[in-house]
Image (tube, rainbow, N blue to C red; front, side, top):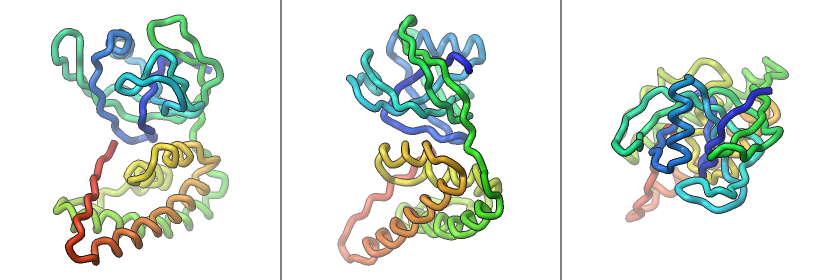
Length: 219
């Protein structure tokens, strides 16, 4: 068990994935400054309910499963504000929330994604990888951007998390993916979603005079 400062947001962070944030609220300037000084991670959690001020109000209630993030880049922009880039580290489960600081903290337990059947995971990845590549090819053709598919992770869990992060879907759906009970279930769920997404996007792009926007972000 460890105490972790929390940043409730309207986004889901996956391990291994970057997140860019503009820090301007006093409580989060304090929190992030402490994290930088102590080289401490903070937790990114999706807001389940509560008010929101660019991500979190004082009564924001987070989902119980989040992802720790380690700050990798800081750009001061004056008056204590800053732009930061952080990298997702580990899943965690919240046990107890605390409100004795200016920001929310929690007692959390790290909860890495288990692999319960390595052979089943390898098979599921073999099914997922070509659909992910097709999805990226569609983005490449539609948005005139280039992706080096040779740079896709070879590690199976890392590839699954990347695929989950790239999906253009609701945050509720992404939270469900983050909460997957094991790597095999996550990969099978992604395979199902990617088959539907690729089929739909291909059909839309075949329609004449239809402007299809396909935003792409690693966040």
